[in-house]
Amino acid sequence: MTDSLSSSAVQIAEADQILGEAYKNKRSDIQVQGQGRVEKILADDNKGSRHQRFILRLSSGQTLLVAHNIDLAPRIAGLQVGDSVGFYGEYEWNQRGGVVHWTHRDPAGRHAHGWLAHQGRRYQ
Image 1 (spheres, rainbow, N blue to C red):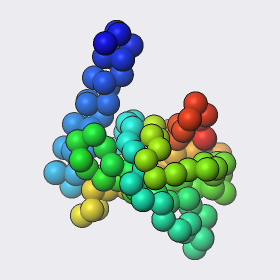
Image 2 (image 1 turned 90 degrees about the vertical axis):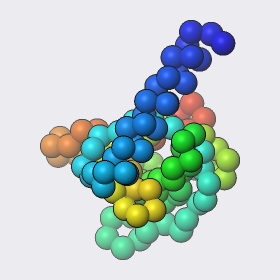
Image 3 (image 1 turned 60 degrees about the horizontal axis):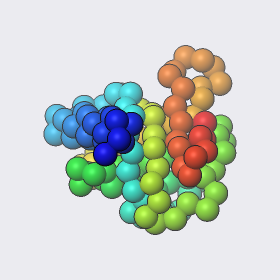
Image 4 (image 1 turned 180 degrees about the vertical axis):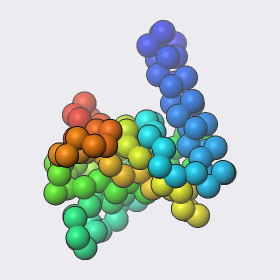
């Protein structure tokens, strides 16, 4: 394994551990970065701000709902079950594993800018 691959694996394991502890301790409002595989693609949430929604499974087995604001950032076109998606956003606890949102730039500049990464492209 090359150094960059082992470094990436360590980063993913550390992110999974942080998310696992946040879930276990019912913590919210935490900036998180990680990566997972798309387990399920859900219908868009069109109430209020529109959100592209899908469920990621982390390497730890934990699932996360991603709610990506498509009024503020581009939709991930061509997203499919099994695809790998990287993320940086805010974690909110729920009983099913949690939600990651704020995966976009904050136009007001008051919140950390988030993003999603898919097939070499960053969505923010």
